[in-house]
Image 1 (cartoon, one colour):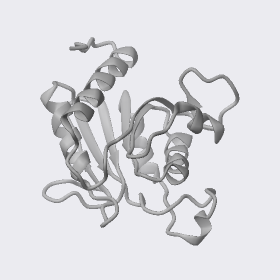
Image 2 (spheres, rainbow, N blue to C red; image 1 turned 90 degrees about the vertical axis):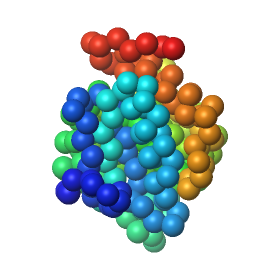
Image 3 (tube, rainbow, N blue to C red; image 1 turned 60 degrees about the vertical axis):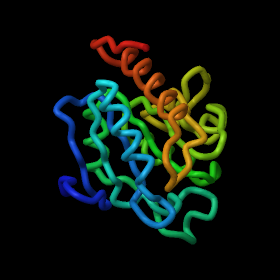
Image 4 (spheres, helix red, strand yellow; image 1 turned 120 degrees about the horizontal axis):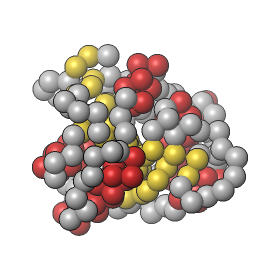
Amino acid sequence: MSVGGGLAEKGTFSEAEETGVIVLSMSPTARHVTKPVCEMTYGLREAGIPVSVLVLEAGMGLPYDAPGGVKTQTCGITDMEIAQMNRHKLAVIHSGNIASHFIYKVRVFLRHAEVPAIVVCQAPITLDRFAEIGIRTRGVEGEFETKGEVVDVVSGVIRGETCSAPKLEELIKKTKYWLSVYSSQPYSQE
């Protein structure tokens, strides 16, 4: 894993001084443009939240255990990426537009990482959709196969487009709230 510097390339990690929030970005391609991730990260940092960014080595395609996953590029997560996630108090996972794809990606990431997560996506989705495929989800009872947990969702963030001010504010508010829940340091809810 290399350290990010100029361009966000797959397998790069830009580390903050504190281990507060880690933002996961899919591997950059024409379909997974990192523009919203850069804007979200900048907005979170401007709000005083320590943010690291991890551009996944294999963030494209579907996981092998997703419906149709064996026919596409395989999305996965490395041991190094899991270790980086586990060092943080909260993850923000920027996923995509097709719910039947990205819920399986989130399951792969949280199957190994023990971090609570906010999922940022384009498609509208409820927390129940994550729970239905075995992802530990806030407020849902049952047996789950993941160590990590989806605690919130911000939908309506379009891949490759500017992140709107209302969506950025929603992400900042939710991040501050959940970081306060999982951290000893209080973050203002304003």
